[in-house]
Every structure is written in structure tokens, then in C-alpha cells.
Length: 136
Image (tube, rainbow, N blue to C red; front, top):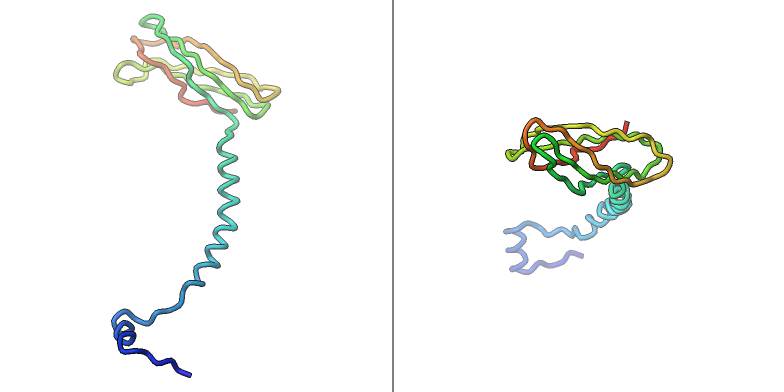
């Protein structure tokens, strides 16, 4: 049995095309994306919020025009990692005027330690920073 279409409905169909019922078509792909995406999102957030090596600048102090002292914190969440940190000193125009590498032996257990180092500079430095820490 065919449904009768009113004159206004015929006009709307002619103008905009026939209305298809697509409400159920998006639910299956959305459910698949949700079943895969939500567990991946939870794993990714947990994994990347706990990196194996983390560093944080605590303080720096200009000692004289040829030296700056830096204090930073190194946290290792995995045992047995040898770590090398790169420390830099910068002048007023943000040019690197001194750089040293700081090496840490492998640890027996996850740990955090504060470290103070002096960076020799070629001209007066105004700040110091930890560029990065990487494991060997």
C-alpha cells in the first residue's frame, strides 16, 4: 500500500530531495570507534603521563661573568637507566654561551635526586636551563 504524499510534502521532496531515514546508520560506526577509541585513549593518557625520565629546573644563580650555577631535579621511574642531561647557559639575547652534559649511573630502583652543577660560560649568562635528559 502506497502512502499518499500531500502537496506540501511533494513540494519539499521536489525541492530538497527525498528524506532518507539515516538515524540508525551512524550508530554502528560510532560504537566501533567508541569500543576502540576509549580504551586506547585511557591507555595513552596513563602511559604518557608517567615518562621513564623527567627533569625539572629548580633554580639558577649567576656566580660571576664566567660561571652560572644550576640546580635541577631528575626523576627516574624505571630502574637500570643511565641518563645524560644537557645543561645550557644563555645570555641576554638568548644565545647559548655555555653547555655541559651531566651523566648519571644506572639506578637500582626508581628515584629522584636534586643535582647542582656549575656551567662555565664565555660571556656573562643571565639564565640556565635543562635542555633535555635521555637514557643510554
